[in-house]
Structure formats: C-alpha cells, structure tokens
Length: 335
Image (cartoon, rainbow, N blue to C red; front, side, top):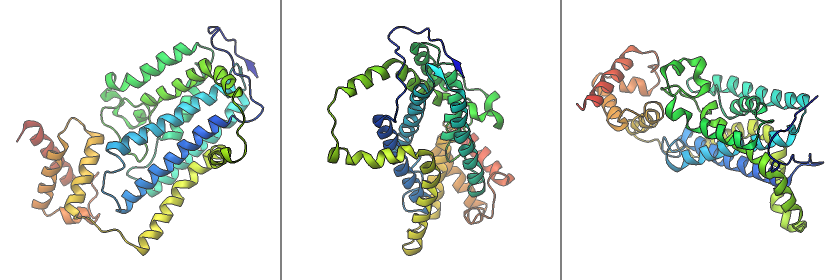
C-alpha cells in the first residue's frame, strides 16, 4: 500500500472514505442502468424487425446512447477518486480492474460468436478499464489538470484522425479515419473525457456535496421507496450489465414467436441499413446517393436476392467491392 501526496489547491479536500455506500452515487448509477436497458430494448426491437432499421443508431436515440455512455464513464471516474484518493489502495484497485477487464473479455468472446461481423472488441467495459488505468496518473494532480485533459480527449478525434490508426490493433485509440463496425464501440478517445471530468469533479466538489447533503433532513420510509431498486441495481451493476441483454433478447425472441414482426420491403430495408452503416463508417460520402447507386447495381447484376438471403458475404465478395468502389466514385464526381 502506498500513499499519494496531494499537491493540489486547498479547495480540493480529500473525501472522507465512507463507512457505507453513498446513496446519491448508487441512485445515479441505477438511473444509468435503467436508461441503458431501455436503449438496448430498442436495439433488440430493431434487430428483430419491430422498429425501422437504423432507429437505435441515429437521431435522438444515438444522442441518448452517448449520454448513457458518458454517465457511466463520469461515475467511474468519480468512484475512482472515492476509492483511491488520497490513499491508493492498489490491491483493491487491481481486484476491481480484474472484474471489469474480465467482464469485458467475456463480452468480446460472446459477441464474437453471436455477431462475428460486428462483435464488441472495445465497448463500454473495455473503455472503463482502460480509463481507470489512465486515471491513476491523474489522482495526484490538481482537478484543473483533469478538466484540461478531458477537454483535449474530447476534441482529439476532431483534429488528430489519421490513416495510421486504421490498422485494427489501433482501433481502441479512436483516431482511425474509417470507423470500425461494432455493436458497441467506445474507444479511449474521446471517451476518456467524461471519465476525467468525473475524476476532477469528485476531487473538487465531493466533500462539499457530502457536507451539503448531510444537512438535509432524513426522508426515511415511503419517500425513499423509489430509490430502493436503483440502489440495488447499482450494487450489482456489473452482473446486471452482463445478464440484462441476453434476458431482453430472449424476451423479444419469445414474443416474436407469438407475434412475428411485419417484414419491410427488402429493398427499403437494404437502403435503410446501408444509409445507417454509411453514416457511421464514411461520413464524407453522400450516403443516400451511394446506397441508391449500390442498390441499382445489385439489382442490375442479379445479386440483390442472393445478398438478401445471406448467400453473399459482403466483406469478401469482389463483386460487391467493385460495386461499392464504382458507386463511391460516381457520387463523389456527381454523376
């Protein structure tokens, strides 16, 4: 066990290590879990065809997903300070890190077999684990340094993208020019930003916040009943994260056996899926024009039905690659 010598300003008061858990942290994490489950339920409905393709990855739902991820990372950074500052409990940190990293590896393995083309190689748990390691470097620094570093992390992908990071072993950084396909992609940049914001906020404000809350009168009984499930969820957050999606998928699947979704027109479904994937992977290309072009070429060459039945593998078929290349050239030239 080693001690961290704090050289930060007097306004950064080390939080007293609580004897029990802090209710407001548990409630915040419980709300984030509830929001996550809602978003994943919408994703499942889209996957089974009950809502339009691209719903979960565009518009307000896309913003909602980013807010959820930000909240988890913010709370992870906040909690790192509560557990490891001003005294670094290295063995406790390693135990927590091992649990998160192990769960992240389990997610990668499971999704690789379930969704091999879009498996989760660096999702929210991977990001929390990596950010926790980086966060150790900021524990002995002033909160202002964390805020500046957070801002730099958030804007880095806007200015530092490079083909150098397009290699798969660099995808975790978040600076590749072509975004990889994944069902949950939360790279270190820009997502280190919310984590460091939470870390800095805990160092700067936590002691004041606890003092302010301690002066409020206790509202035991019925007034606290609504927080009970949120606190329970927070205290079992990792287990809930691992099991909630298989449960939701199973429930939607069972419902689909009773009331199958109305299948959309395959050409419209192709266009919607193509536009959604294009917007995520190549924002420089006019996606509506590109997808319309590829659809027309697939129909002309009698490839569309085979592609729709899954008889053609998009990632390896040279005919699909030629069509995509030609349509990219056409839309960029304005033809």
